[in-house]
Length: 537
Image (cartoon, one colour):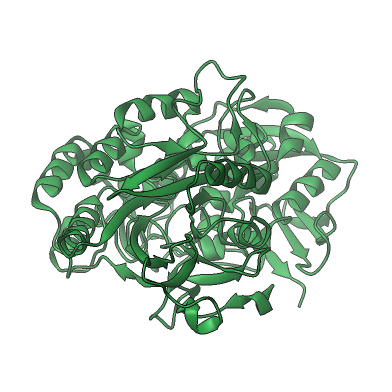
């Protein structure tokens, strides 16, 4: 695949594609993805920024800055006669107390105020079931789309609420926007059994063909499947001109040497044409701006642009900032409570916690196990994807804990055989290369794994702390396990917990309360890793 990817911003004409013709048309695509309810500004750890740091110019993003950046660019470009659309690649929901409190109302309000043209459904749009997504679609005037959902069995969602695709009229130019959502959403969220997921590539090709038959020649795929799958889609589907993606939180840039990849990343499709793919990290920290030029047949002849950081140099929109402050008022007093302090940064980034032992994983797993150890529980397993932020050193507030653990999960206990524990670990290690959230952070257990082995056979060794003695995992022994209720119900692929867990109790205290209590009891807390998860070199 690497041979077919161009690693820098590209003028496609320079790569042997047909030169521009007189009828060329340029489209500017402004885009964000994976906002995750970061309505307020964020700090350098992607957590909600406090007022003092924001006033000092140390924070980023927030919807008021997003509004300024989009409105400024859109006004400048449209004033110069350019064509502009504004897209969101999904996951507006979940990730801060703004969502926990308002359940999507504020996301809808600010997307309307900014003026988005279309949004892809992200997996976290299903976190409160299809009912809440349906409610959200009623609150917004722009289309919320996803092309690989079969909604025929649902009595909540229908194709009018979530259409397969949309055709945008941009100054008389017809721009088709198609979409797809990751097919493992049934495992990573709560869509319910009535929402049927179809293959992304098959669904997208069908929508391209349908739009082509209508005479639409400029087609954008607005996806929520992650960059690796976007690249596979670009290679497999004929007729997609541009992919604007989300889900993997990938920072693409044409100018930053610390980028995760080029903006745009170029991949060849089955016809040998280059398809530009863009993504703009997450959490409102960046705005993507892709400039695409089409010839008179709708073929891409130029693709360039960059992500722009929304730092203190971007003045927040005053009206939106005032409204955010109003909405935050009832939340901030409770969340400002100091529950402990940390002697160092508690690392909780997705890049670390979805791939290896991390300090936040140890904290959360330790806290769970400490809470229920007296009930005969020996093992704690926490999915790395459930950890959503890093905590800075110094005082720790309840709001910071909620930002790390925003899902309102409860502590769940059950019994499981050693064979079942091994199956769970193999599941957790099965999609590390894709950055999947199922990576197992643990306590009371230590394991070694081999990333080069085939999924399903990556665990090399496992030991359990049995009353202070590390003992090899016995497939026949029944162990006490603690996790969160999402995983216990089969979330993130942990179906063995749902199928084989015995004497399950899913209604323990809130995970955020357990962690806050543990931090308070162990304050000042010193974050650490101790080698409980090791990878074969």
